[in-house]
Length: 300
Image (cartoon, rainbow, N blue to C red; front, side, top):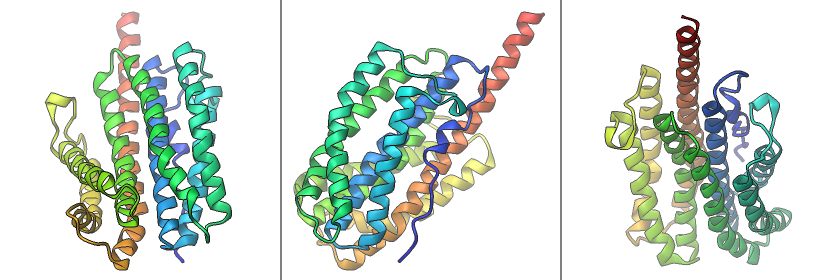
C-alpha cells in the first residue's frame, strides 16, 4: 500500500508571515488558509467515497483522518490566530458570525468522518452523511474567503491570484469525489453534471494561468519556475482527466478507473498546492518591495 506523505497544507499558510507587512499580507494569508480549507472538505469527501467503493481502503482512511485533523487545526488558527503564521485572532464580527455558522455544519461532517474512520470496512450511512454535509461546509468556508478578499482594496490582483491558484487543488479533489459518487450511484446524474463542470473549470483556470487573462486579473507566469510547474500539472492531469471525462459522458467506471484516479489524485493536489505556494511567495516579494518603496518615499 502506498504510504500517504505529509502534504504540508497547514504550513503553506505561513509562506509570507513576516512582522511589519501591510494588512493586505495577513488578509492574503487568511485567503490562502481558507483555500486550503475548501480543498480539505472535498479531499475528505473524496476519501470517504473511495472507502465506500473499497478502493485502497487503508490509504483513503489515512487521507480522511488527515484531512479532518488539518481542517480542525486550520479552523482554530482562523479563530484564535497563530503568531508564527502572522495571523491574528478573529475580532471582526462578520468573521466570528461566519465561524459560528460553520461550527455545527462542520461538526456533522466531522462526526460522520470519525465514524467512517473507525469502521472503514463497513461503509454505509456515514458515506451518505459526508455527501450531504461536505458541500454546505464548503459553501460556508468559501463565503468566509469572499469576505476576506472584499477587505483587500489595494491588492485586487494578488487576492484573485491567491483565490484562483488555491481553487485548482479544490477542483482536483472535487472532480475525483464527483467521479466516485457518480460511479458509486450517489446522486449519479447530479454528480455526473458536476464532474463535467469541475473538469471544465480546472482546464480553464490552468489555461488562464499558463497564458494570463487580463480581463480577470490573471497574470501570465512571472518566472520560468511557474511555467515548469504549470506544465507539470498539465501533464499529471492528462490521464485522470481522460478517465473522468468518460464517466462524465455516461460511460460505466471499471475497477481500473478507480485505481487510476486513486493513484494520481494526491499528486495532482500536491502539484496544485505547489503552484499556489509559488504565487504566494511571489506576492510576498511584491508586498515587501511596495513596503520598501513607501518607506523610501516617506523618508524623502
